[in-house]
Figure (cartoon, rainbow, N blue to C red):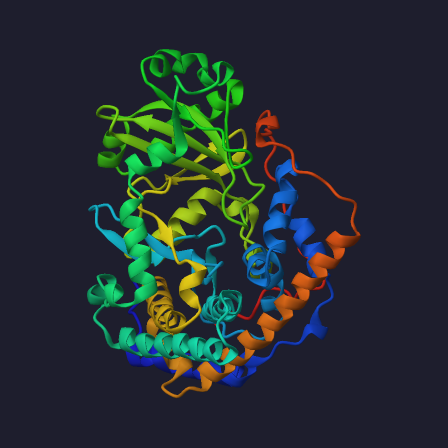
Length: 487
């Protein structure tokens, strides 16, 4: 085993990277470098998705510049690859924005606040996450009605907190860093509200929100998802609701394929968690539309019952494709199971993760498995229009710094950033410019939709099955730069 570098040596390596990529260069955003139409990049990213649901994704992106930003990770991934980068890699969230931080239940039952969406996770330049989250603060603040000065102040507060915490992590004992928790959460109004909402999002609350009594369901809707579930459903009074087009029950061969995927999924869990899962009986299966970026990917829910009718468990089985950053970071689609990629990235960055986090495969497609809405909640936009934006920004800085420090080298990152505000100023400038670029791209989307023939989204119930062929690989846009320089 090679002798590890000392913390001073790693800090020096980070400082040396400034010669290759001065901090001021991170401020640069030049739209003229683009050679690919961002709307074409989005269209390419829709390949392999359920065609009937793609219009819903575009509808959600068209709602606001921030909505566009949430669904346009492929565009920003390409844009980030065009400019200079530090070459200092850590585990990226990949889709760092203000609503992808939130509360959820930890294995010990306590509520924790952390990054909670890792569909795009991958190892890459640490500042790519920082740039994306900083940009999201500006766009979310604008959507919430915050004044421009407050949006700028929030961005600076986020960056200052990230820099300060990274300097602290660089000096912290390794195990102390591993156990580090973000404090003050109940004193920050937006986070307090998130935790309050999460506390109410219990399994029994989800039971009422997502299911209906068989006696209240239409006769045709009350049948079991598969013949194997007839005894279970027949002895239990609830099935999934139909909430068109968000939630639709699944039947027949597709439901059977989803249920069969539980066997390989269970093998990805730790033995004691596999034991607990085995005590739950599947009762029903549904297809669910979630988020913005994920719309069009296959997302199934399984309703299960454990020790009686007041012990429900909802599992989400969510399709995962190649990270949008993979073409620019030299990652091969064949290198790993995409559900496992997400699980590994999530476990690397989070302080505590969902005890039922795992992965599976359904007819050639990769899926992530996790609990659905177990004490989960995210920030409401109304909380980000005043001082709450500033307070929330500091928590974002601390949370992202912890995730990067846990999964990367805080000494190298701290060495590059330094103690001054030069890094902050550069990222803040990029974020302001890129937020404006996002608004232009959003306007281009609205213009294209205005001139396009109208189309209507079909119900998810028309989905017959998953295909046995893997999701088509998203082609690398020719206009984008090759893999970025590595340290």
